[in-house]
Amino acid sequence: MSASNTSDVFSKMLKIQLIATLAVAVVMFLFFGLHAAISAVLGGVSVLVGAYLASLVARRAEGLADASAILVNLLKAEAIKIIVIVAVLMIVFVFYKQLVPFALIAGLAAAAIFSGAALSHQVKRVI
Image: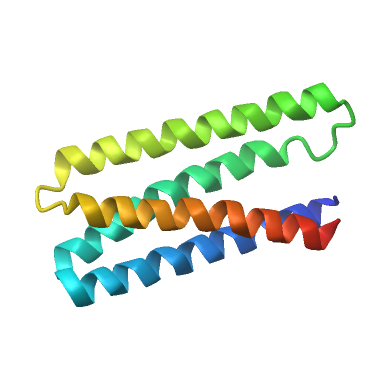
């Protein structure tokens, strides 16, 4: 996969995650109110930020030919993604007092689920 294809895949994945997060936020707003919508956005943003930073690390493997080096780089990217998601969620739990846990989890789940679905769909199209 070339550098431009990799960038396209990651940017499309992030766009799909953002759309999924905003869709959940709209639903939460309509049924549960403003704080639920904000909670959903914060849940989705935690995944978006983690995925973006992980994509920066994963892109470093583009020029590598050794399978073990690529695997190590991808594992580093996944670890960074998880650490960032946990850190952002901890910050949200500490500072946002009107948090709606169900909405936060719904936003997080939508972004995470659509992340994997978008990435697998885009990789299939590139291959």
